[in-house]
Image 1 (cartoon, rainbow, N blue to C red):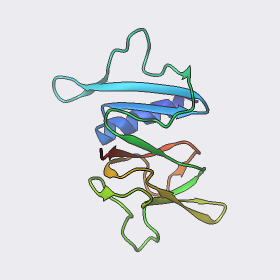
Image 2 (image 1 turned 135 degrees about the vertical axis):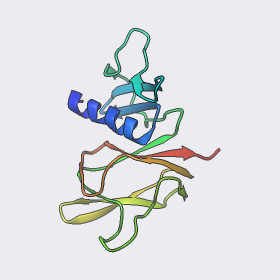
Image 3 (image 1 turned 45 degrees about the vertical axis):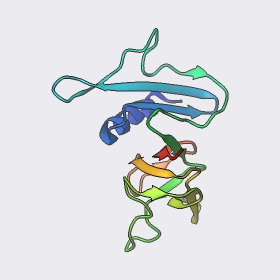
Length: 147
């Protein structure tokens, strides 16, 4: 995992208002917490004996945070939120989604691949911008899973 990618995850978390994020890629895991400072700024939370960019080996697990479930890209390509440029996005922040519902598409090698929700819940954050390149395993959405 590259440090630049980890820094991007932190910026995405700050922008989307997440307070915690855990991300796994090829058995390496990074976890960080952000806390609101007086005056509204966000600062990394102190971790016991570790920095926010510490990477450790762990079992391959789906990233889950206290805030929600991280939906990751199954392949690399271009991220699209809508089926066509003139159509509305599949989902917006705050939308209720069902397991199996299409959230976005990834274009790879001229093929459009749907990204489906693995859980039923509510969209907390969309972590990638329209038209951005994503890598396999990149976090795309945060979903608050329904119990």
